[in-house]
Image (cartoon, rainbow, N blue to C red; front, side):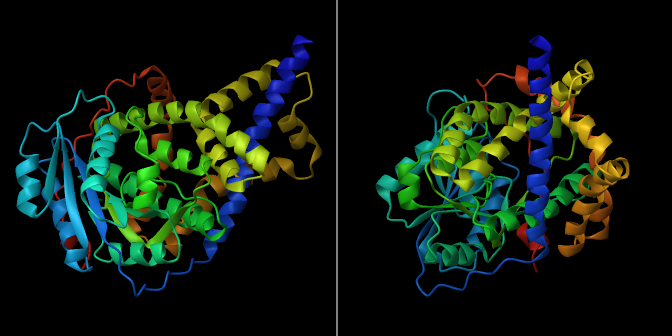
Length: 411
């Protein structure tokens, strides 16, 4: 009986890994065709732009300047910098660049960003008359056409939106490697999900919610990945998150290994926490209502466990090698499977995603840097373990030092 249970779990783990890979591979095929652009809307909405910052004196001014330069009637949007427990010159720099500064000095810094966003959103909803809220980071920059694009998508009925994310800094090798990943995510993940009616992923910056949605679904104060938590909560409540390809936001990539590890470990801890909270509800909605968005959302949320599942599958596969195993059965029975497995290990994981770099017309140096991504894969085990061990008491700010202005990116 014990051997049967071990073999069962081994095959379930193999089926999960294989099925998930096939699902997202087939989903990505839609990325070979570009999505439609939302037509310009005659009616212009009024926006509140929120930019949370904790000791971001060096970059917050550039972020505010990019928002102030948006090609949208200036009387129809206000820029709010949410200065969260700042002890440097963030308040002064943001105000000098043209933002209205809200100083958040509430209790503690635990998961500070989510708490600051909730506090600021409630405050602005109570005091202002806005149709929609857009959220950015202190290290992010917005393309001049960002608000026009978001306004067009809102006019078509969207409640929640995520803009297309690109990297603003590509001066060092690590930043180039990470920047190359955005092209693949946008083309073979976000675009297909938008075209097929699924929900996009939220990235913390370049997000837009209607005021009514912001009122109904407040930011979580305790999760280390408040954007992912909000994403899964919206999907659980039947709200679709649309992807706005023409609303571009630029994010700062880590330039040192220390920055990268600090950020990724926090993301891992937050992803594990979000999966614990929302996976059961997503599964219940997917099965109970036949909700394909909830199914995909749950599948995406479960990817935070993929390393653990892969390690478990490998261990169980070895232990139960004398019992029936799906992977070994497929390998031995299907004609040409040996060559197919070799091709599948190379094509989907390396060569196939690189097609997105061609379709998106990535710079040659970014395309070349993509092929170094496996080097970062070597860090997955220590990052996953560190994420398991990390606490949730402190949000953990990543230092931002890249002084890139929107004028450096857009002519």
